[in-house]
Image 1 (cartoon, rainbow, N blue to C red):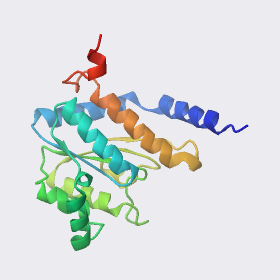
Image 2: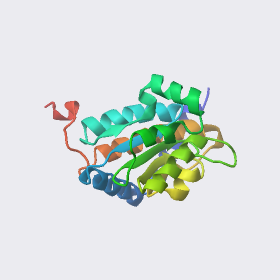
Image 3: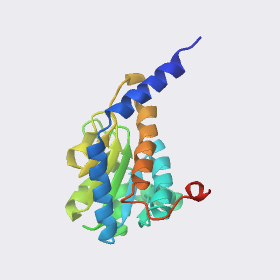
Image 4: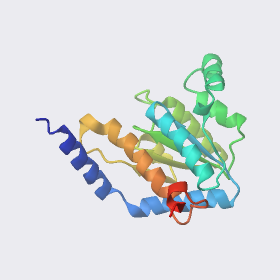
Length: 199
């Protein structure tokens, strides 16, 4: 009988126990400030991170009343930019068109956080360089060592590696855990969710 499910859940428990509540509170304060400044939050990610970005945009708009977007929501624009500008600059070009500014935030969902030397998620690195250039806040939920996102971020949660064989599924799963925790935080929550309102 396979022990995989038991091991996976034990790993998830170890990750949960190791997350730093102070780092999550710092993320909450940063997002609250963006909303108070009438800024916007732009989520970027690829693969599973892109799917999480799409879901997070829904939650932060609907539940937190925060203006949010992700470039991966519009496949026509995304593929046109990739075709004309290349993959590496696709997010930074999109953010320039969106007039990313100092009141805004860029929120990264990535397993590695971007690494130019290893040529992994360079498009995320370029997006963050633009964020630094214009003074936008940088947030993220990333894995491994956090990559470029953790190096330059204002509020970044690094999901610890507890098993090299499950880095990606745990990181992408805990991206959802963290953003749901943040969006339902009393300092962020503005609109009650449907099932929580049903008596």
